[in-house]
Image (cartoon, rainbow, N blue to C red; front, side):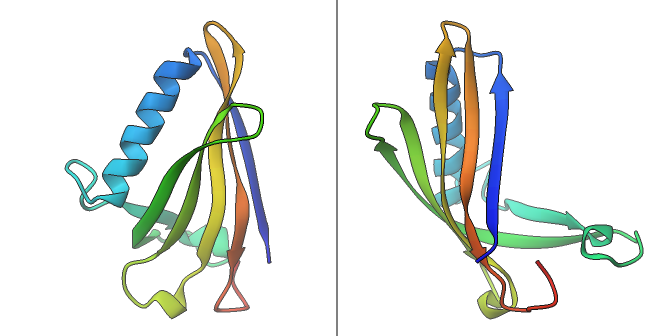
Length: 121
């Protein structure tokens, strides 16, 4: 299973970032405006083809808030295509926020995805 790992330093207090992150993810998950038509976009050049545009995949997101063993905020994520699910990768993972100081935090995302079309991914 291919893995995804991403981190980004954010110059925002962790509490504010956690609240915004959870609101966006719950909005996407619940198809609540302005997130009701959210889709992932992939440049066609990212899959080794000529750069002629984007692939847009409307997604279904399931998420749940958790507190990890160290007391840090995180959310479990399951992402799949809304339609033709067998044609697109499925992602299972977590994202979260680590406190660095009073005005800075670290956003992280990690997990794995299954690739139904073995030549892509």
